[in-house]
Image 1 (cartoon, rainbow, N blue to C red):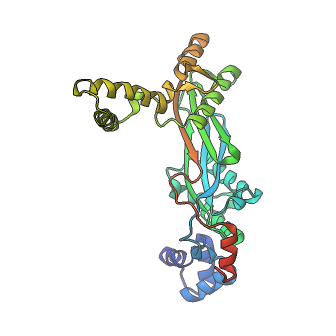
Image 2 (cartoon, rainbow, N blue to C red):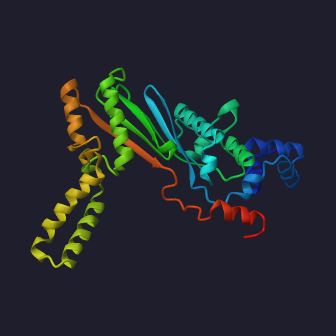
Image 3 (cartoon, rainbow, N blue to C red):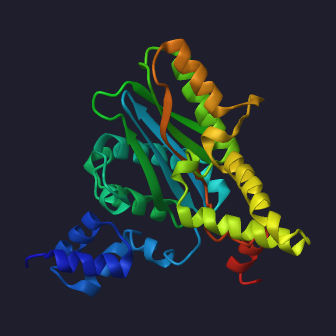
Length: 307
């Protein structure tokens, strides 16, 4: 019997198993769907489906870099214990390497890419689920490649054992310039520590600026300030907002007397080049995700029927 793509899709939805595993199971079962489910269950490959509704808010951020490109990925699991295992961290590094090499447009496309031994990342992930016993997900990635003809470096930085990851594109000099690369590392550490939301004030959407100004006006009005000075107060607070959330206007973490833009100007003057940050990305594990509220003891009690 011919195994169609629709049959494979249906079996994947039923079991959560990998694409190639589903195809093989359907072949073994002669195309019988329920028999194919049994084949996967016997091999332990249907385990992923049972975990699909669980929360995976722990994990690791991993990076892979080659000359001219770098990739940051976040791979999630349910517990910090699993996140720290060599097996899980190696898998995250493999995902980063594949994404950096192939440059997919999104996570969905990345999951179809072949990883170790030609096995698609999606199938590798499901194999980890079956082996480890936790929900695992490849959440997101950022991949930067230098524009054609551009001189610069793309610098990754991983902090706190993979809890925070950053990638920064610094333009203006060559990768063999040690001083220039050191500045790139400083920029990456700055992003990790200070968590800017924008590169410069010009990157902030106009509606976001107006919203901030409206909030500052209301705050000043509630504090009893005269109507005629509300705009001036709002503009002053907006300057602090720029200093907090725009990378170029932040105080440099190594020397708060200087702004990040000052360092770039100094390096530009020294190199005789326009040294600038092109773009950056910062991932923190689990940000925006619901956290598990159960501790290990309560989880064990639940498994033993004592919860």
